[in-house]
Image (tube, rainbow, N blue to C red):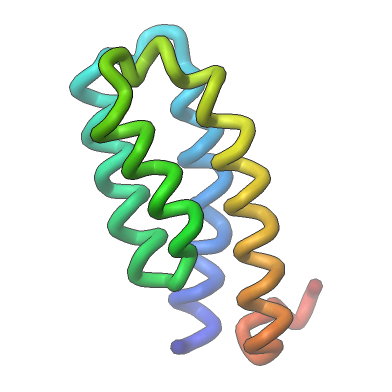
Length: 97
């Protein structure tokens, strides 16, 4: 995988997760974003994050109401997963850190 593709994914993942905590986010928009995040997480090997997002998207009767239940864990898992992948594949790390 190229560093530029990884860098783009890494740079946008956490802000996209943070955007799920907006008060004006409706159910359909949340479900679309969870689905998209799940897909990209899977493509980049963040499988634990994918499983958590799947549960939030597909198993919760009120995904918007469950945001406070799932989002903190998703953010932690995302950070840890990004760091773990870069630990295994150091060429993906930005030269600036």
